[in-house]
Image 1 (cartoon, rainbow, N blue to C red):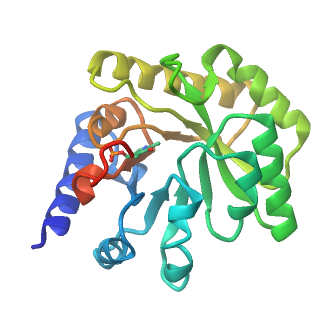
Image 2: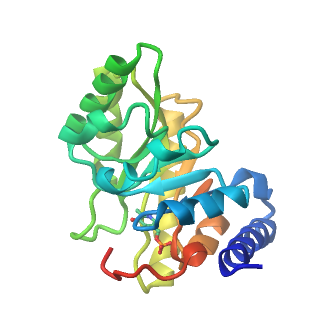
Amino acid sequence: MTELADNYKRVIDLIAASAEKTGRSPEQIRLIAVSKTRSLEEVKSLLSLGQQAFAENTIQDAMTKIPALSSTPAQWHFIGHLQSKKAKFIPGYFQWVHSIDSMKLAEKLSRAMQQYSVTAVLNGLIQVNVSREVSKSGVLTDELAGFIEQLLQANLPGIHWRGLMTIGVNGDETRTRHAFIQLRQLQQKCRAEFNLKTFDQLSMGMSHDYRIAIEEGATMVRVGTAIFGLRGNLLT
Ligand SMILES: *Cc1c(COP(=O)(O)O)cnc(C)c1O
């Protein structure tokens, strides 16, 4: 097996093991391969191993891959900070955006989807800054209910609200687990409070903490390095 195939199999096996450890079915967890900074060839290799969900964090990088793979079953998730003026690049390319954290962005995304096609709907996740780190984007925990209320009042037909996303605390397992537990509690509370039946997704967990995330209820894990190896530029 190639190194990529090896890594990929290891991640799939570990996802199953973490799910089983907490009595969950591995089918409840969607593995999203984070292909940011990777080449088109690397994405093609992973596609040929059966992976279909991929994530990018900049429009520029995504556009070197998504159009070239439009005839494949690849599905695309946007996971980075998105400037609202770039919302127009989402329809037709991405099926999911994990990083919605402002009214302005939500409105622009909904409008862009509607302009693209009146029936087009984007799956939207709200990014929450659970750990309150200043360096992180996302809505603060205390402001989440008010934000969702505003989103629902604005009636944005181009976005289907599917759940919450967060990023763990680098190098701190205890705080990371706590953040993931909090995100799950917030998702359950908001789903009930606003009667959102399909607000059922929890996007949490990256290469170093996806096993913790699965133990705490993640339905989507965003894994780059553990599949593709270290990125050349460690700052990205
Ligand atoms: C880069 C990135 C990931 C993947 O990180 P790895 O450590 O390479 O698995 C996941 N989520 C977000 C938001 C990212 O920017």
